Length: 247
Image 1 (cartoon, rainbow, N blue to C red):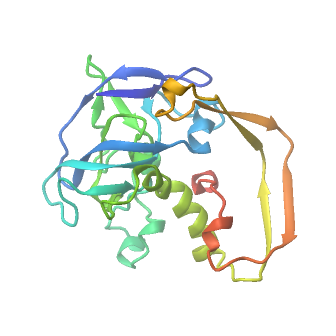
Image 2 (image 1 turned 180 degrees about the vertical axis):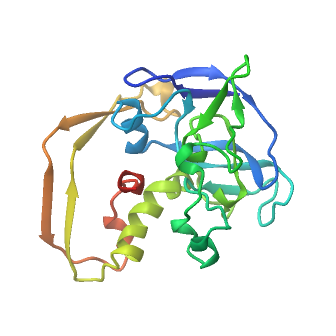
């Protein structure tokens, strides 16, 4: 399969053909249908978060399960799934307390599977890690079964991909962590501002998504505090910052 591989900071991602291992116990293989691009991926590319290459980047993934390993329950071949970038181990104190979102032993931060190995390889046998255990910038990925969350088949792929990080971290921070209520005062901070530029598609390319680039528009830290009425649809004001930055 082909994947966009991180080969070093401040270098373009390389499109490579990689070999994909079969899923082992507690794992599933997913055919990727859509992927978002998070600032966390850009931080790695720009060297702001040092990582050792090679890595298939991307962690906002949505796809269809192609195969399951042994001891997998709750997800089956043919299911459409949102991929979670922080797969819980299921065995640590936090997981056993029913709080898997603060798992103490997740291998996701090491970009490996729970046994400490990778499921992607170059033709010469060199292991290629999957970013945060997902690696959604590839055509396929082997992920922990706990990271594959079945969703209704009618969910659009481009929407499902954003749930994997942008929605769960942003909306989760507002609704579950900060517990913002309608009418609350809110303060939003950010250390960088970005602007997106889109190339205008030609008529012959109307069916394709426009090319997008993200550019840093100001290095100055900015803070915006305001009195805002938070609607009952609280997800509309959620930040898309990946919480890994604060880990």
